[in-house]
Length: 212
Image 1: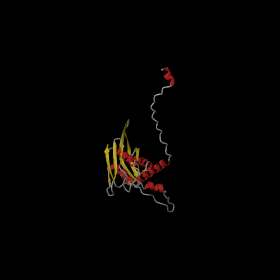
Image 2 (image 1 turned 180 degrees about the vertical axis):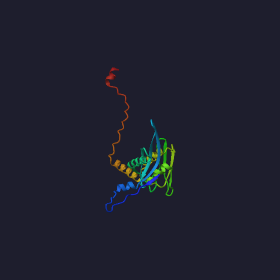
Image 3 (image 1 turned 135 degrees about the horizontal axis):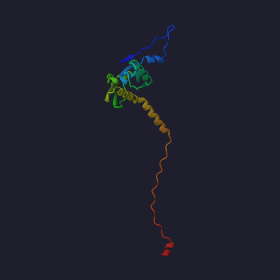
Image 4 (image 1 turned 60 degrees about the vertical axis):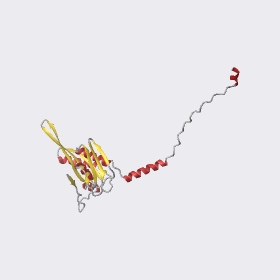
């Protein structure tokens, strides 16, 4: 299930102007990945609660996942969306695909994410597709390995996106490290111990000849 909230009305006479942060929150994409019903047996019968896993993104590189619990499904989804907004992070993109191939694991689930040519589309299952679409990725190849548990698969996808690096930033960082290393003074060469000289026989002294 996917919902996309639109911005509110802006000022007129007596109107209220929304700030940019609220507009950004309203324009986020919300996707419900998984809802699970949990039953607890009590004295009077069974008490049901719901767990929800959702994905929130801005369709431009930012994405986050959240987990919420509630007595009703809307409460659980609302709490999960709030948690996902707090844990949003920026994914480095190369156009509309990912910069490099990454393999991530969470629990018994493993996810492979690989860049693809423009026009390929999102080759992924439901849980992985939800995360990638919310992040704004449109061309990517993925493979889900191991357990198909949707919660573990979403978290493995989340870890894979966190492990991606921008190639330009990585090159700049390596150059900066190389320049800093070049500025450091060159340490003196290590001292090599000299081999011990061979002991020569001591020439006989005159006293020795007299004793002989």
